[in-house]
Image (cartoon, rainbow, N blue to C red; front, top):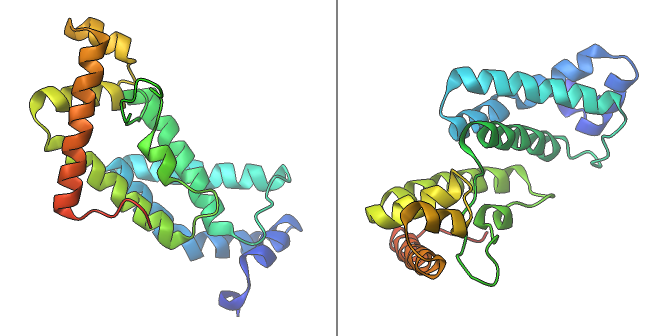
Length: 197
């Protein structure tokens, strides 16, 4: 009976005091959300904490009256989970950024351009897999280029900071990043990764 009830109805029933409705929503999506978190953080223990935080935030947001997703509960819940994952990585490993190394737009972010506020669960799975593949692609770069991208992605350093740490000019850092991005594109082509879907 409850399997056929739409998410939006369950949300409204929960807000009206029916605790069972929230349990149904959690049980409906918990495996998918948990697996997605594990695939990103590579730790079951950490994923369990982030999963609990996700549903704690979902409950608080529902009670605050800020849920307005026209019945699209799963994409909304996944955005909450993804934001918590991003917050965790920012706190522990710096900003998660890939730059296209254009001197006119130093802050271009590949991962930002892959996200979409209205993504379906299929899009979310594809984006998660693509992010993992891009991270693996960085590992295939020559050492010098890999280090430069890691400084930019995981440490969130500016090109000026990278240049100072490496003892090179900003133009050299930009040039090396440009070569690194070209190599990544070549690897992506060879592995036939799909960057748009």
